[in-house]
Length: 406
Length: 69
Image 1 (tube, rainbow over the protein chains, first blue to last red):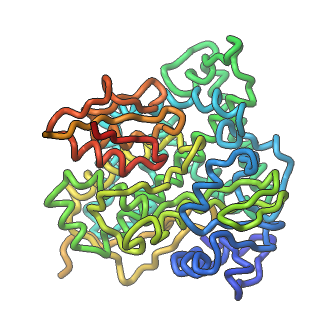
Image 2: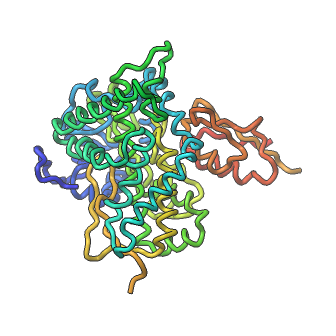
Image 3: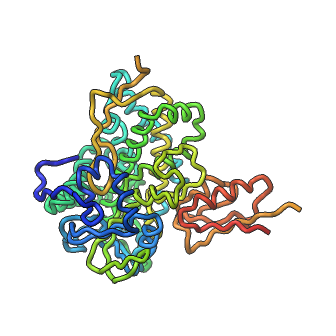
């Protein structure tokens, strides 16, 4: 999404290898040829933008960095124009390094196991069908705005125990943090404050009336010394669950539907063989991985033979790693029944996405229910597909015509 | 002579992607955090060899060994 009110417009990129910029409109629109150019130049490239930032371009270099928590810190995980004070926006465990990371991560894992997700699945199917009921008779729909977006918002609201009807509030905060916040610190801080105030109210309500949801779960959690978590930890984790759970999966579902809209062969195959959908979900995750993370270099080192200096950020592009032909044959093709797929869409190493089982379940259910009820659909030639800018890439506007082409 | 296979998950490498459990539920189990270990002693029952290799080749952390005995 481009935003004319952004304070710091970046000059357009003319030399991608030495001056890359993941917020450039060309990258937003079609990053794949850019990644190919960068990868051909070097396993690690650098830009002076964002106060200095590297980008590993190969799967191997991405893996090396993800597994090296000694030289690469997670205290800053978004590449931005500014380097604000670290502690203010901490959202453990995603912003934590060892040894603090492990206990914070273990706390969040049990509610997100595959078995826990199975219990949520019936509600997800109902949500998908309610959404489809809302537009199927119209013959056309913006599938990003009216379907893909609301599936993860409602899922995480359901898990947190907050009203699903507050969805648009959450979506606005996320837009402020992940898109506007890249270039405008004040937007980010405003959203963080509003979210904290919102969750404080819900925490207060649960003090007198505990509930069976993730907010109460975090309030009741104890650290290794048997002490309750500090309020800042609880609020940080709640913010993380809300932010990380929404536009990521929104993007993944949107990109998957975009692919199926323009690839009738794959669509027909999944309708004929619904058992192939989980395999297809993995391939769509690989080819259209939504999430790019970041690290901060805290100690000088070498990655794939390239020197890396402290003080720089690292754009940790799992999406680019997943397009590396040295790792994936036909990396630039969507092979819907790809058997070997060690894709890194959910990260590698200790920061593997806590919500990966939730995201996979949501994607699978979203595609299954959509294909059952809307087997025929295509991009509306009168509309425009718009992609989000920055850290999470996916369609934010996805105009479809529903039904068979006349 | 038929070859017997055994699977093993390296607990230090596993990060809980749970791909093995999805692809070969008979051969792997998950703990309360969602991290995987082999079911029983990891022996692959006849007929499930393909699933053992599939689990190995889909583990993003390269945490699974398939041992030919």
